[in-house]
Length: 347
Figure (cartoon, rainbow, N blue to C red):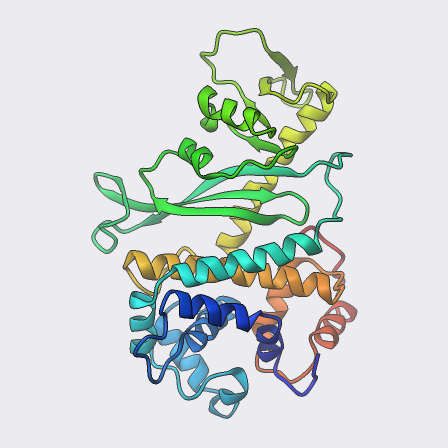
């Protein structure tokens, strides 16, 4: 990468902007737009994710502090919070959802050779959801409980590289099991999920498509089944699966690997801005979440392409304080590694 560009510009250069332009045209994102195109909206929101900005005012003030670098970062002029707020409210969130999906496809190809915690060649997915609590008076569309609002983010995580292959965002009332209706089953893949997804009709649909499932039985299930006693906790676990060729202990290890999706949710809540929102409409919330996902995947892509032997945590921390610096990403990361005791870590 060009060392004469800022770190932020180098990251933005890794994005497939021609694909982005086609998505904007398809959804008419720039229809009748004169001064603030969708590309600048994306850059401003990606900047907010990378630098942990807490509000629209925060974004405006931080970028205004570097006026001489805005043009090189892809901005035609100063970023005004009112303009950014309007864009988040009115521009179709599906632009950013579909763009994130394109990045996910790239990332999965890069991480296809990653090893799993178990010795398998099969694709293994972990399915789960996380709830993001909201204020009912500010987000009345995000129904959850009588006195509470929330959105749910359902994710099917490819455990090779911890890349989300499927994401669905809804209000908090939609039951998790409905995620099985939205999935496109992949023949031969193993889908690991908790017992909140136990619905025999839907699981049979996965079976008919040639996909495997692995879940836990509900406490009131009356059937012949496989049992496993956890040697550490003494807890009896009962598993349900249509994958009958693998050893019992491998099934147990596979279910244990489901924890990776929980760590993914914890990671993005800690290191991306998806708990505090810059707008209150459904469009603004989904726009922010999908751009956050795309930034996470972009970091994973850069990490793999540049063969950076550091964790995503370290990568995001370094980006957060170096976005305005004119140095290559590799040199900044290597300098960070040389001046500290960081070790190679999980994603």
